[in-house]
Length: 117
Image 1 (cartoon, rainbow, N blue to C red):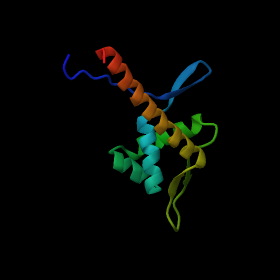
Image 2: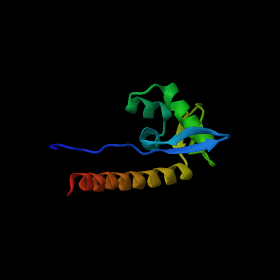
Image 3: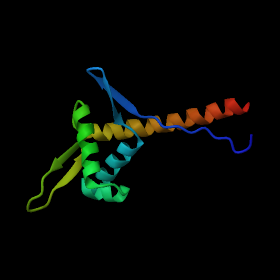
Image 4: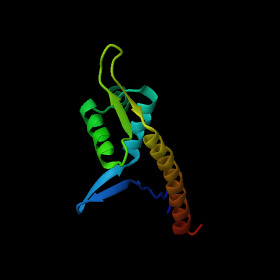
């Protein structure tokens, strides 16, 4: 078959009290990366074309589910507010990016097997 592709996504979930919640995926990692670059949840949200509320909800969810917060925030004031990706958040960024590379390689290998190549 011409132009055959395999596509997929990988994310991390956590289960608590029998309930499964999505912890990290490509969108949340992109949000963390934008926060790291801009120092702001609001600017990160704008860069992704998402509402501030949605971005804040995602940050809150990640921080709540993680053992250690992934994003630290500072409320506005004389110098304004801001957000910083913590060392734990940076660790997850690096690990997830490596996972994505391995996952893409897996998809490539599976396509080769499926195609008989």
